[in-house]
Image (cartoon, rainbow, N blue to C red; front, side):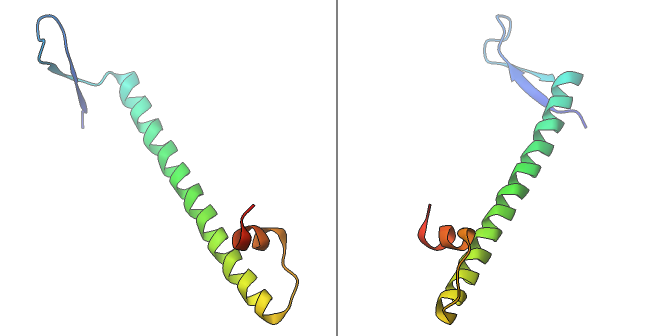
Length: 77
């Protein structure tokens, strides 16, 4: 499936629809994959913070020692 972009030229001042070049399409696909990887990394980081916060609360209630990640999750850096 071809993707298109709008360019403005002197002949078409309101824009002209043109297909992506092969390089642009390759870059677009690379950008999409990079964004997916970044979103997944952010999700993993957020999940770890929630898990550390939950674990830290449980340890505080039980009177156990907290690790650095749990302290950071509960009280900030």
